[in-house]
Length: 523
Image (cartoon, rainbow, N blue to C red; front, side):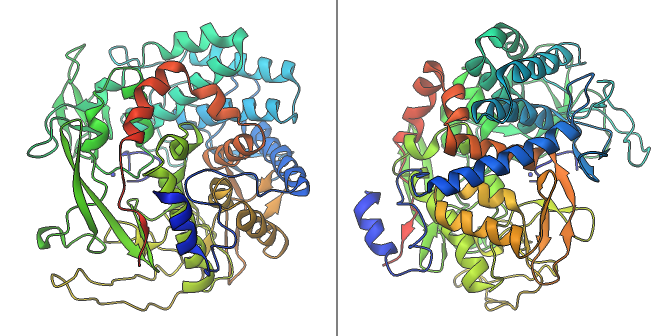
């Protein structure tokens, strides 16, 4: 599941006691709650400085006339070289980052209002799919034109509509509506036609499950290659759906599922239809490791509550073992607060696993693995291979060093003790970890900035290879938006407060509250 879409698939005291004695335990927040309270006044001042510098990159990324941010840029913020294209995710990230910049005092309220109003006005003129109300995936940030030719190469592209990218834009529109009363009607008018049910395949996900999956997206003309012709809403002409669906739980695409359920466009049972892990039988031995767990039933849906093991922990894995998939939806939906026996256990353990991988397992001296720019040029998924379901791995180093502990008696281990090379860390991963390991995150960011030099006039650069010291001197709108969103929630609660409406809480909170993951500590 490439994060740039399918274009290119009880806890508390007991667990705290089990955590004692670990190198990560001293820095991780108590499982069961997000905790920015481990931050000192000096830390908060540092975060404010990071936000101010990161905002400078957003100003440089954004076209003054349209209010649309480029996907990425190189060069100093005073002379940016922009990518020439933007996406719903990029636009959404700019909108919620503007709210954070305002709420943290980086910019004045008048500037925030002017910027968001300009962007919303441009959104109102963008070409979108009439029947679904969704936005296309690529536009020219300077003109707002829907792209049919890819700017970097000149190759033709078939316009695509992504479920997850539209999810981030819709989340941002909800934030604007909740944060700025003067723009509420304009934001709601843009949001109202967006129907996430158009992406939802109601066919049963598997035997005994009365709900389906969200597709990766669709094209409104034949793209060639693999696609499924259909129309789940029966509105407008048929479209060409992606062959892939988002069938796992710990993925960035749950933002689209959350929004569809919250807006009564997707049935709540679909939340439980996704796989926590795939089953533990030999038929599923292609996945990274053999999960452990038990089956529980919610709303009539049997859920295999599987978990992976890593360094004494049991956690529900993402596809790639990365921070983006695991923690970005938590910027909007307060998952740890609403899911005390699920996300409140899993999120701190995911962060701890990343810390222990970087410091103790691979011995990089740094941590924070998530899809990002490649220090040598390009873009790649990075993660902790051992805690991702993808058998081919999101690797943590430039060399793509694999881990294979086998699959019980079904598949022998081939690489149980790998040697790791030039680890690649991305700062946005540490920012996402702030609610769950504030001290560790702040120390890691300081080291990336001061020792590795991965910091420029627009804040942290996108990634750095820790042993060679090679820095990817690029700024990506999405990654900078994760930085701003995380800072906003820690310092002011900006995104959670603006996103959560009574309807959102009424429809989502019970789903998260009733579930018990198999995550925890061994022993």
